[in-house]
Length: 122
Image 1 (cartoon, rainbow, N blue to C red):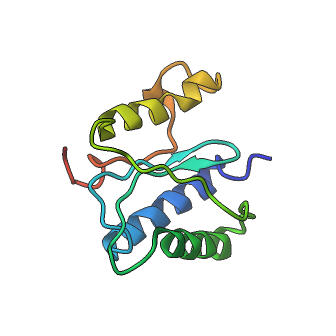
Image 2: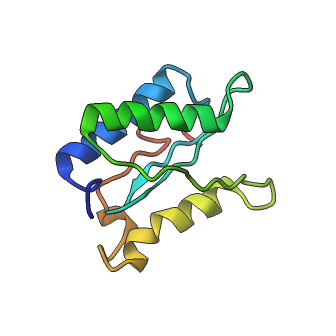
Image 3: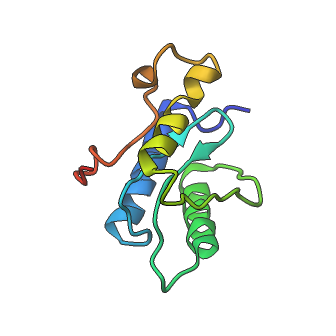
């Protein structure tokens, strides 16, 4: 079911992600929130005083309450190792809608916000 890539929901989820950034609930070097019809990808750093599970659980609760989303119970996490590089992971995620046949180029996919949009630079 495509509950995430609806324009109004997409805008709200991206706003919720930026809100968490502004509130320093996740300490970001890069935020790439890539919405797919049935899941999303997020690259973020987390403050030491909170667990990643706690921050994600609370963000999902916020997004569910504001947007009526029914989330899967858990999430899959992957630590980006220094030899992998954030840019390589970001590029891979940006290609997901292309691989899924939803758009021809990553730039054509409207449901994302990245570090440039947040004014973080690289």
